[in-house]
Image (cartoon, rainbow, N blue to C red; front, side, top):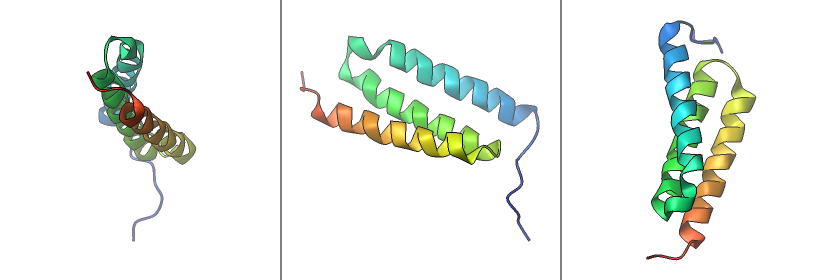
Length: 80
């Protein structure tokens, strides 16, 4: 039976570092174009996946919310 057990190992840590770094880089680049806002939303989803894999579900849940906010901002931004 599968319990709520955190996945462990270096793989999850490396994935988390890459996901959060990507998310923060896209956040920093949002002013350059609306595509970076959508990329930030994707980064939030990657970070959320990391949070759930690491067993920190509150972090995963908050990142899903941030992703939805970013998608909404992307859709509301003017198209070039």
